[in-house]
Length: 117
Image 1 (cartoon, rainbow, N blue to C red):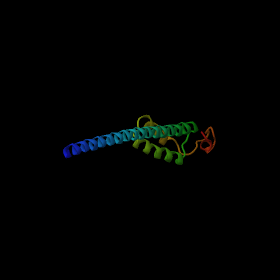
Image 2 (cartoon, helix red, strand yellow):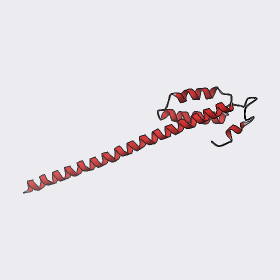
Image 3 (tube, rainbow, N blue to C red):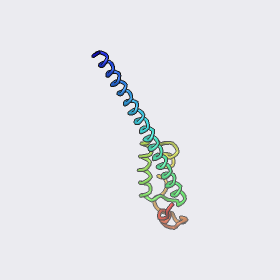
Image 4 (tube, one colour):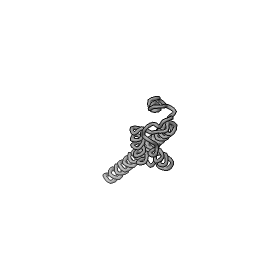
């Protein structure tokens, strides 16, 4: 009788442990999937902002130092999240733009960076 009770409880405990491990695995898998989605979303937002800074600066004909520093900081995080490719080339082109306005700039001053997108 004692053997039956011990054998029964071992099976119950083993089944419970396996069930808890299964639940923990499902929760962990869901959390990993969510983290991956967040990572990809942030990377794409950074990519979008870098491209906007480039397009805005290219149109204005210059890129103020603060905008360049911001783009470089965003690119470092973008790259750390696995981004690369076209944005690297855009950042290199952005670095080549003058940091002050040129004569004949379509805005005539730094208003290009004071308006909202």
